[in-house]
Length: 399
Image (tube, rainbow, N blue to C red; front, side, top):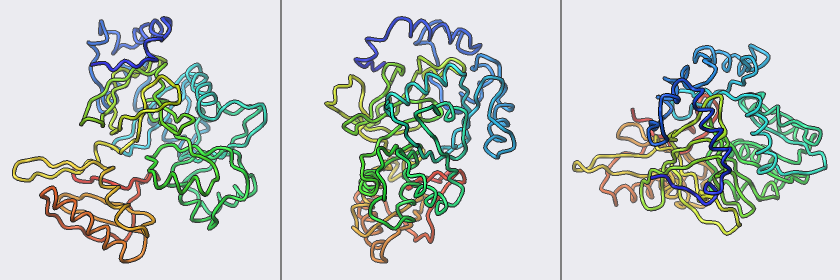
């Protein structure tokens, strides 16, 4: 059942009119008569129907090649005519492809400036850490915003030296990049005033958030954005709110507090996003900041990384956040970790003193035994990291 938020009730009629007008330009979505007839999509279906979903008939193979070549610096930009092509990181499998027009880029810029970066008459410098630059991000550049882009595949030691010179007012990066910068800097606090830190692309855990805030001297803001669009952002209280003026939200409940979102973006036109079931596990939250939109208490990881076992024909499930908390709270000396489920066995890597590994392994064994699960936990010599540079701590690699 559609979960209508208070903000959606007040949507202007022209937004819904524009949504219907745009989807009628899509050969795929124009075939459906009403909202309830739209199929629930996922990445596999979305990519298989790519040529018919986008309104310009752009071919999937062409779009992927343009995005890939732009990432590898084999071409000047990632444009097909006036359309920007972007590729998702592919942390949950095959890479997704997204298309945005110049008008959509302008709308994205307005949303980011107003809701995330904030308006100011003073010029500010932004350090933006990315896998690859994109015209989408370039479009934010203005007379009052000076962007410096940092490729996360280049040595972060060099980036830290550049940060010391440029002293950016705003830092936008993945949590794992920020944690690595803290380690490289080897200082308790940055030697200049940072106005804002914005976390993107990865799950921000509570322990990482606290560490980053102490180091940067400011609260950390979150942007929930992926191939599907700019979905949510944190408020003045630090709570993540859905952009309910442009996102219709349905919830597939996993239990009393956690759900998987199905989203419809009312503003996307080049590549309509309609009833798209995301792979993320979210925990419902509350906030008294005054924004009348649904709140995300936490982004708990991807459903692909839920650990599952069969015990006496009963399926036993452990969510990523539950596993994370078991490890983190097992020993105060744990700096970092990864845990990988590989068929019946677990591979655990701990950054910390030797006895921290034993504490984490014992805590996990106790948790598993309480669920009736008996499995071996092997010691890993290095952390897991995806080829695209994105970091995950809880990974289910079982086919």
